[in-house]
Image (tube, rainbow, N blue to C red; front, side, top):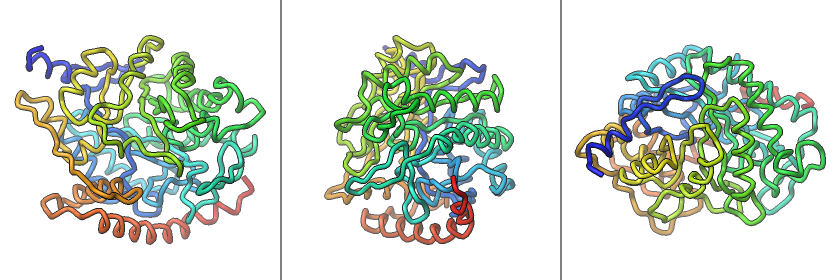
Length: 405
């Protein structure tokens, strides 16, 4: 395959079922940037960060972990979409994040059992009491409220100028917990078979679609596997894809792994190849919905092969685009060039993620030319910043915990 033809594959447009068009096949995938102000609002650094990815040629950027319920956040640096959100800052974010024909989508999430303990009382599909993870179980009444929560957040996103939403059903957060037998051992209509465990996901998609209309893009992130014994298997994940194929979803983002304490994150893998291509090839055979594959893409030829082979319609890039926010632009030129991934030794749990998160702060604050932090320093600064934001989060949202449900 000649280089010019290879570039053309990544340069080609992608039309989603709702009619929206991506200008190329490269996406900045969802990740927790931890750049909210601690009250659910964007900051100037966060706005600048997404502007940089748009300037850098990404067809779409996903803002990870945007919360539909501030009682159950992943971290205090998350955004919240509600009537209490700073609308001026949100609109600045959407305005600057969609330049150069780029899309800007929010990933709608609810951390469930993995909600940040300093600012939450975690609840999941079922009560759990295992080492490093305890949570209460959700009532039917609480579950029934979820579709409306997601729909209202999606409508806020649409009104504020975001060009799409992604429903987060991966990585061990709430909707992923419903799909996972380790988290979900309910014996009502929301537990048991994979069809029942997926029921709430389908109900949320339907309610979101009703809220935003037929032409507004709705995506979803799912796990191909939880990569933990007793978790979601690839067999059940393929059944989830079949179920999603019967909905109005516009883009399925395939990822994997989970952040529960006993599991190893896929992003900390030493593999030099994309993680979930084989699953995507199987999924392609059973769905008409465009697929995005996220995880482990480090070289341009990997992205080209994923699209050229038909396994993926879009390639999701996270850490690679942290290292170079203009990576899409780079990969769409003749000369190309791949990011230089740092190598870490004896990384503490979460240390590598903390390092990349602080690198995002460098880009957002236009400090990319300064020396980057070592792992211990990145972790210390990250944790100190989160502690300060927890104080602000409690002050703004503590009144919500007084409600019964």
